[in-house]
Amino acid sequence: MKHIRSLMAFAAALALLFTAALFALRFDIYAKDSAVLYINAINVSGAEGHSLIYTPKKGANVGTGETAFCWWRSATFEWSDEEHAYIVRSVDLTADGYNGKNNYIPQNGFVLLVNIGNDYGNINYINKYSTDTYNALASVKAGDKAYLAGIDLENGKIDISSGRHYEKDFVTNARIYINEKPEDVEIYEPDISAERLPEVELDIPGAFAENGDIAFSWQPVEGAEYYIVNVNTASVIPDGHLVCANAKTSEPSFKLDAKKLTVGNKYTVSVTACAQGKRDSFNARSTFFLVSERAADSPFIGKTVVAFGDSLTAITGWVAMLAGEIGTDVINSGVGGDKTTEAVSRLKKDVIEKEPDIVLIMFGMNDQAMQIASNTPLVGVNAYERNYRRIIDAVLKIGAEPVLMTCNNVCTASGYYSKGQYGLDYGTGNIQNYFDVARKLAAEYGINLIDINSKIAEEGLADTYICAPGDGIHLSKNGQECFTRWISDYLYNDFFESIKQNEESSEEPAPESSAGESAAASEEPGSEPEPVSEQISAPEEDGGGAGTSIKIIIGVCVALVASGFAALYAARSKKRKQ
Image (cartoon, rainbow, N blue to C red):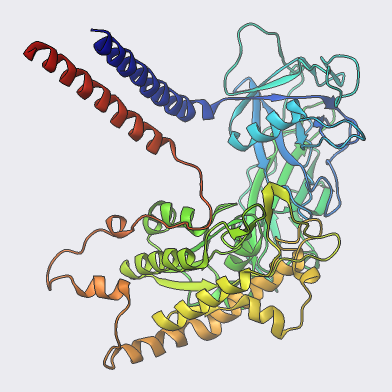
């Protein structure tokens, strides 16, 4: 009897564990729509560990330099009379050494700036408020509603304890609630007694040619006396470096100086209607590309192009700039931190389901990173090759053209990359082995290869020129422009020729096929091919592992619960027989 009770207790515990896992998964899904952002300063100079609000009393923009607040995340909020709440207008999540935040601060709103810092002399602790806010901002989206508590924007005050924001006993009651309006706290509302001007209706073309007039206009706003125009670079973040800051015009039109723009770049235009004694209009926003002359007659117009990679794809500007060079949008399917193991796992969702014509593939920077403790890479070179074969085979299976790409070296010069963060060393030179795999597979499959690493060497460019300072891994502005030039030049000059040569060679007797080719050849004539998503086998990672997914945990829980109940049933059956 005691044995049976033990088994029952064991099964009950496993059932509770399974329920908890399901609850955690459900909570994770539904909690993403709401967040709480903590504020520890207002209208002061930014410092490490600040979760900081800037109102119009601080200035028209949070900064004007190319690297202003570059290591910060930011978000712009503006009051909506219709929603009776603040609305998130933009979110800038990229924190690096070169993408400065130059957000316009709307008269009826504010900008949030937050970074993570704990470098205060002998003080060494995690800055909880700024860390939590920095992380929570990743779930905030343009269009979300926001409610302020413990914050008085008009008087520039927030409800915080005395003392400095980085001291251990510091407390803040200044909070921004995203999407969920709390019932038990007083919510700040601005003075809306003055008439507000209607929003400007912008109708800006999606692209301008590099040698044409860059001019746009809008319908006059009734009651407006003048308009304020801002233009930010937006290839990486929507509120990047200002190329036009707070230009004032009495006419409902504006013309940009083309010399201030870069071919291939994306830009955000914002226009606000203003008048004495009235509240500014809701800030109108739109975007455009500056495209090259050859993009007007590009053979890629109408093609679906996907850029599939890690953070070198996700957070650098070359993807957006490439779109301006080849005359078609390029879908950015880069994810920071990804190795080829994660790439295989998300291949169906982020590539196959986009129905691409061309897929640019660039992984390896994270795979090759050496774990200092074990002196092994995160993904061994053999596993990397096997994962790359899976990606290539899947892309070819849907009739798309895979284009393999090598990337830059890691810059280990002083002031660039230093090993040790996360227990990893990216700068061992091990990455060259992974470049060799890409070159080998491109030759074996007869597919396109853009050997950027070789291009850097051929042009004699220093790593300090290509890589961002303070980082050494990601691209500088120069690096972004070089990547764009090399990739677009290859696509125009070599891409179709390579395909033609491959088609001609395929008409000759084929050599011994690769694993992917033999799998395709094994299908019977006239039979329906197996869906690509079913053919992508599990990724391999023989150097170090990615975290166990919650699905696996739940699967284990289910198996254990089933085993527990099976054992309980067996014990009871045995008892009855006795």
